[in-house]
Length: 158
Image (cartoon, rainbow, N blue to C red; front, top):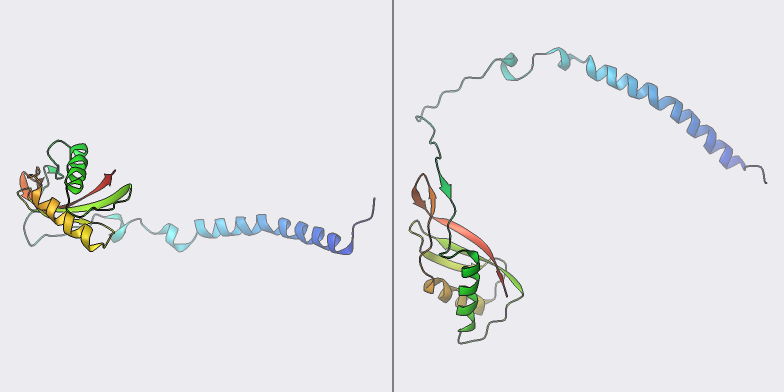
């Protein structure tokens, strides 16, 4: 067996020196962090006392119920409806296996706009506008039992 070269001996001595220094440095940093001026201060804003704010506009509205918009029959029926409508198109539409669509609904549940989320193909946009106009009314999205205008994104799968 050959004796170790000078580089290996130097590297071994250096590693021992560094490993002997790491523990005292970590201990010093831990002690410094535990006894720093911030650790003796009271916690929270305003010395730990609660901050009182006043709402000049009246009480904040409470959301009692919140429901997203829903297609009659669920997402499977929505997928089937859109695919059937696209199959009936005058010009054949080439879709990928998965396409994200965004439906914009008003507060009554009527589809205002149906567009592809990522694609900018003008023929696809035109056909989806036709499909959106042919869609039945959805159950509108509601907050506190009042209809709200919403957007609904869904994945169209072939």
